[in-house]
Image (cartoon, rainbow over all chains, first blue to last red):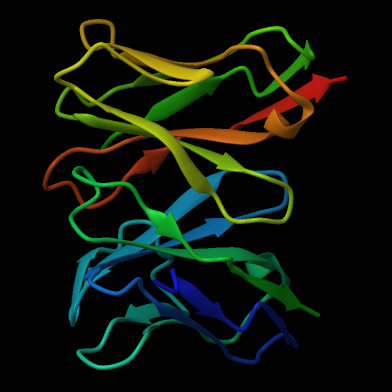
Amino acid sequence: NAGVMQNPRHLVRRRGQEARLRCSPMKGHSHVYWYRQLPEEGLKFMVYLQKENIIDESGMPKERFSAEFPKEGPSILRIQQVVRGDSAAYFCASSPDGPGDSPLHFGNGTRLTVT
Amino acid sequence: GENVEQHPSTLSVQEGDSAVIKCTYSDSASNYFPWYKQELGKRPQLIIDIRSNVGEKKDQRIAVTLNKTAKHFSLHITETQPEDSAVYFCAAGSTGAGKSTFGDGTTLTVKP
């Protein structure tokens, strides 16, 4: 089992550009989560998705950020018109069941740098 | 929503000593409590978890205790080794909840 795959590992964007982060969950996992981690800080929940549905997006900023998990293909976290404050590590995780029933399996993260 | 507080934020111990990290949670509906270890520059990985129907769970040098009445749970690492140095995160979730809520992390340093 290949584990949770995230790409790219590193992404550099200029202010105002768009960033697209991709996440393929572990085989058999239909629950996907995105977390943001600033340097030397904790993991902050952004969004929880199941196939084609957003279950909880309470941690995601209302503007510029969006997420999807289509029927086919990886989950995508999209950040439009990036600003320097968006620089962070973005971790995707997946689980076979909901978050109250099974642990999260994390990918290696995408480190976004906005210049 | 759920709020998880974790203490201490940093912990330094001598190799061979024990380390204890504590977390409190606010939502009495939470029934699943995992602990994750994150080494520098790497992804968080599950090290142990406990469900609300048990009070303690042990796996070699690592143990977790849960007090549902007081709404707190703790991670215990015995006979610490330098490779235990990492950031440890607790989390709380409940069946049907939209997310697991994480504590802010504890940076553990084990000095040889």
